[in-house]
Length: 386
Image (cartoon, rainbow, N blue to C red):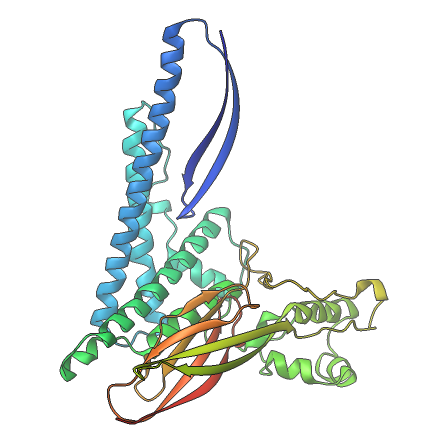
């Protein structure tokens, strides 16, 4: 008998938390009932193995969150260097957990997993330093480490913001409020993601995100864009060739120019307020420069999602933005950061009324997850009377 089937196999790929689905069309020649049973046994084994891998990954993710949770509770403020040091143990734990589990499964089915010796394991801190220094291109194994580190930093942002909001909402004694992570810690997590994506040192000028820029350049990207064409080409960028200058213009054409507006609505009982934020994005350079032939002009993207200019990151990256409200007086998060990729819809953020009467200075912040130095903010004053 001939058995024809369509099967969808889901295989976890550790690029963690990414599952690739393979659709396989199978035509098998089945002559006996024993061969048919063997076929279904193999399929069952695959399903069980994939299920166990998924459960192991879920457990691994929970343990990583607990690890971050412990350190954020123990340390109110964490610098960029502290956060980088936090990455390596988390990465090594996940790497060893995956390798150990794969070895266990493959041993049961009579296969072996080839792995390098402990001396050849790449250290995340070393890879990040090489990446940020831009001294050479990353090897495939190093790119995998960088992708995992990006995922871990996103997990850091989730954990520190969730912890901050949960502790702020609870009835803590004044002496226990020191356990609430500072606003600077949460924003350093976001900054770490930016410099990893753009391969920048923490104190480097944001203009280094553009090609062919010298290290001594201190001007910001918006300042460069606002210059007259003649001044920009003949004075500031006169050392570039025509082709290099066109590379700079092309990169600027994809950089985001974001405008943000907000309005507020107070709930009927007066215990909370909803902040409604509208965001509009356009490219910094929307006109075609007649510097070269007209066919080289960059077209404006009219969609609501954009892919960032991230030449040093291993993968093409869609622009994302963290939107949140921060208390500037107490240096703490007021709302959990919301990651948005579509800028065509209004976003509603709910703020609970402060427990004490007075004037509170808050800020609505929009932080890029792909660009460094292009964040936006709006002041928001709350006057509370009881």
